[in-house]
Image 1 (cartoon, rainbow, N blue to C red):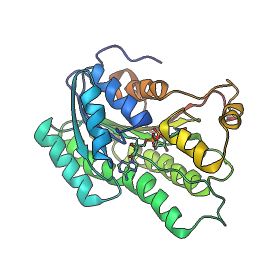
Image 2 (spheres, rainbow, N blue to C red):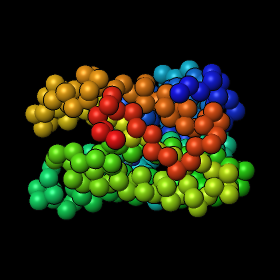
Image 3 (cartoon, helix red, strand yellow):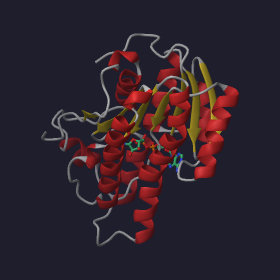
Length: 252
Ligand SMILES: NC(=O)c1ccc[n+]([C@@H]2O[C@H](COP(=O)([O-])OP(=O)(O)OC[C@H]3O[C@@H](n4cnc5c(N)ncnc54)[C@H](O)[C@@H]3O)[C@@H](O)[C@H]2O)c1
């Protein structure tokens, strides 16, 4: 699974959640590979930091993917600054750490607002633009949590299942527009989020590592490499897929 160097040359790329972890690694890699990248994040300072650190062309924008007006403004900004995005990486996401009975409704709503609604809104605003431009590639960040049960992650698992189902629906609806829609299902990745999770919930890294037969966490760069492959023309025959990268965690 490798996309050739320079595979993003001349492509306008929009990455959400680009201020941290997997989104940051993705924005940096796709810019290095020649993409003209809009690094978007709810945390505008973090997005600006990613853009400042990158090699290649990166512009940052503060945008909350759960807010449709903000999403519309984000796409307008992308067109003004860089052009019509023909690659969209929907990576912004939030987690949950409880069973269903222990999940307050507002946490359920928040997790779905970012993970499911946010992915939907970005796709909704991207697809007509990509179709008019002759096609494109959308990569949604799901999780193994969307295909298997993980303890104490009820809202998160459900929201990532929604991302996978949305990916498949969009793939068949827009195949004739030349738009490929796929998602990636990582196992546990060593990102700032996972470090925060460990601090907040008392989960120890060893437990998370032990769930993955490879005996280690993934890295944001490994997931970014998969986003590059899926987004690139190397993966031209791939649509509606959920690519699992989890060190062997999902039993298959
Ligand atoms: N780290 C893991 O183990 C893991 C595993 C599977 C899937 N994922 C998924 O990968 C994605 C990135 O995770 P990460 O570990 O890099 O997390 P992270 O917390 O390090 O980064 C997430 C980024 O998304 C941004 N964000 C959150 N809500 C947003 C919103 N409403 N609008 C715009 N930006 C928003 C945050 O500000 C942050 O910069 C998430 O969708 C997550 O569900 C992560």
